[in-house]
Length: 151
Length: 384
Image (cartoon, rainbow over all chains, first blue to last red; front, side, top):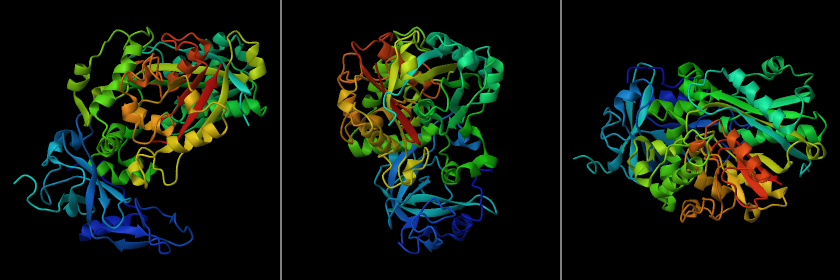
């Protein structure tokens, strides 16, 4: 991934999330009153709008909630990687909090390394991180039970 | 209550196709003139205009080109395929409350010509428009079909839906289109094998799970029920309409809410039926927004035609066809007639109530028309 056109825009609201990724931790917003996690990040805390959300580190484990394999026509570098996988991960701390990502066999592996047919909904995964450039590090996901895929 | 106070008195459209020579503005004007001609109302009487926020022609351009007179109501509804019934509903409210007397709703689009960039094809500078795309696009969830495919696969996993169920939707609508000369797919038959062997777009969704690419425009004329009785065509009454989205809904990215398969249709249906004498069991024919096949079973559940998780099974045994329990998208819909952000579902609903549809449901007296599940949406109940 060299094309930056589809990379996230870092702003005041979401900067702690992306700084967390750079530091190798998954950090989400949390309502200080109800303790509910919030994702994607937003400037106002929906569960207690006068109380600013705080940032908290989560364990980085979850289960695959859904998976797809996008095929061309796609945009930019994704065309070269297609078909690749994209997954939804339901987090261990709160399964109604879901992150979009990609399943890879190990940190740094391409997002088309694991085929759609080899991915099962319900599989336990944990987060890893892939540095894209000085500013952006993306979270990816590997099977929690290492060795279950592509050995 | 707005019940039966207004009616659709005229409908109009252009040809549907690829690379039509006219501009989006010319297409819009043609559709509006055809709708006014259908109603038998002179263009000088139009005083209300409404469309989609994604419509590229402004009310002003339309009025200047068509030579309309003074306009006293104008408005737009957002969220792409979520807008259609809302556009009609806003004009119904405007007419019912006296803000205007003759309202025209329209949608014109040259999607099949590559003339207009799709909203989702913009890159980084526009990411801030929707904060949540920062958490999908970097991972290759780029297009509406990718977002819906994530929900569709979960729906299959959770409720036992199969590709055969999505094929039921695609095939029933193709058969309707094969009997509708206005449909882009009029001459193109499709078999189950064609469906099963077509190329993947975003697996588990294939080519035929996706709507068409269409150039074309449509329009409808909304007036008071009294006025409609004096128009050229039999009035089609706007019995009920509603809009809705649920708590923490995220447009096209409902996986970012508590219960992603319990989408905006559920809220909209509750509000719709609350103001309606006509309930789900009383609906004779339905036009359900179908940018992607899985939206049909999800909407069937939301609008109360079956229980949660039973929408896929509802498509079995020809249930969506003309002799089924609920004929759905009888013109061919967005999958096989034309994809103009669902406006052709509204005009087909009107034809069914007039008794003039190509695939006419015998004695149909009530019709549900919905906008898109998965986005802030809306719905209408039309009656004779």
